[in-house]
Image 1 (cartoon, rainbow, N blue to C red):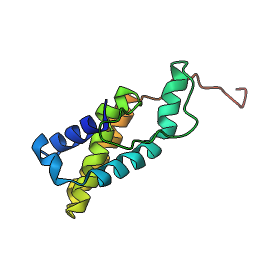
Image 2 (cartoon, rainbow, N blue to C red):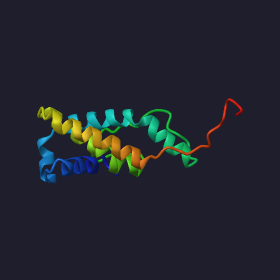
Image 3 (tube, rainbow, N blue to C red):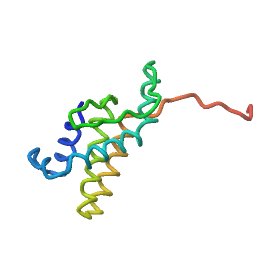
Image 4 (cartoon, helix red, strand yellow):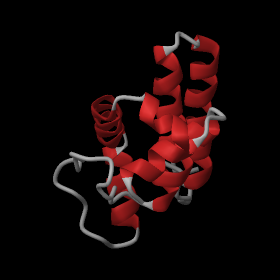
Length: 126
């Protein structure tokens, strides 16, 4: 998925048409997406380890909205657009909307990346 696709998804979340993407500074969106890639870096690496892939040494960084984001689809389609939507409406000082988008991103994260089940070990021996 490209960074532009994440932007389009974020605009859809806030009910704006793709044509509205031109109203946002590309450099700002790129910076915001790079922040998100850093925020979700450890989760991406955990997903990679879970499927047996080598994790990233450091968070990827995009330089252009046409760049591919090499994160798992669960993050690029279900989490990053909501977080980016939160950043976009923050600029308009729509704090209640921002809080909802950020909370929805966390809800989506929990459903997209469920915890791994492990047996409970009785450390007291009883």
